[in-house]
Image 1 (tube, rainbow, N blue to C red):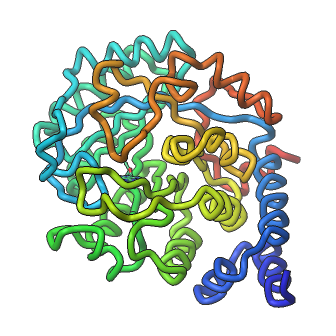
Image 2 (spheres, helix red, strand yellow):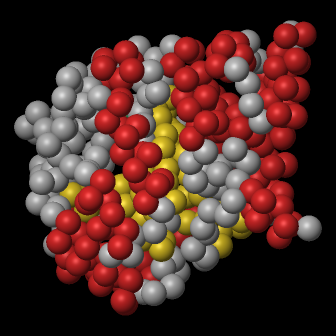
Length: 358
Ligand code: 5AD
C-alpha cells in the first residue's frame, strides 16, 4: 500500500468523508492491503449498528412493462424479445401471503415504469397489504413519478422507495439513457421521496459502460451528501438484447470494495448484497455481506414470471436467492458468521443507533 493510500484510508475511517478527487484516488490506488483495511472497518461498523443480523426483503417483480429505453436494461421498451407481463392485485397479494408465511416482514414491489400502474391501482394494493399485514413494511421500486403521486403512495402506507440514481455524473447518465431521461429529474425524484418521508434508497451499477473513476467518485460524494437510508449497488451485467450486449460485466472485486467504502461513509445505511452480485459468481452475495452489506432480497415473484424479469442475462432466481429456499440461504449466511432475521429491519438514524448501542 502506498503512503498516499494510507493517508486516504485513515482520513475516510476517521472522518467518514473525502473530497471527490480523493474518492477517485482511493479507487485508483486500491490494492489488496487497503481493501482489507476498509473491509475490516466496514464490518466493524455494520456490527456496531446491526450486530450479525442480515435483513431479508421479499422481492415481488410486479411488471416488466416499461416505457423507458435505458440502454443497459433487458426490459427496455425496444426489446421486442421480452415477453411482457403484469401481476394483478390478487397475484401480488398472493405473493405477500406466501412471503408472510415464509417469515418476510418487508415486501418490495419492483417493476418497470408501467403506465397501467395508476396511483389509484397502486394505492389500493398498498392499502390492502397494510390491512392484511400491518406488521410489514412496503417498499416500492417503480421508477420516476410525480411528487403528487409519491405523496399519494406514501399516504396509502408505503414505507420505503428505491430509486437508483444509476450514475451521479450527468454526461455518463446521458450515455446510459435516451435524451428524455435526465440526471436532474432523477435527483429531483430522490429529493421529493426523502422530503415526503419515505426511507429512500439510491444506488448505481458498478462497471457500467463508459463509467470512470471520476463517475464513481461522484457517486460516493453524492451518497455522502444525500445520506440515503438505503443504497443498492451491484455490478453491471450485459443483456444480449440491449445496445450494451458487447460490454463486459462489472467486477465482484470493485463492487465489494465500494460496498465497504459506502458502509464507512454512511455507517447506518441499509446496504443490500444484490442479486446481480450473486449472479456474477458463485458465492458473490456472501462476499457482499462480508464486505459490509446487511440486506438480502430473495425473489418472491410467481415462479412463471421470474425468467421474464430479465434485467441482465444469467440472473439467478431459483436457488438460494429464491424466497422459497430460505433455509438454504440461512445456512449459507450462517456459514459466513451472520444470521438471517425476520424483522422489518428499518433504517434508524445514527444518533438513535448510538444510544441503542450504549
Ligand atoms: N446489469 C445490472 N443491473 C442492471 N439494472 C438494470 N439493468 C441492469 C444490468 N444490465 C439495475 C438498474 C436498476 C435496477 C432495478 O436494476 O440499476 O435501477
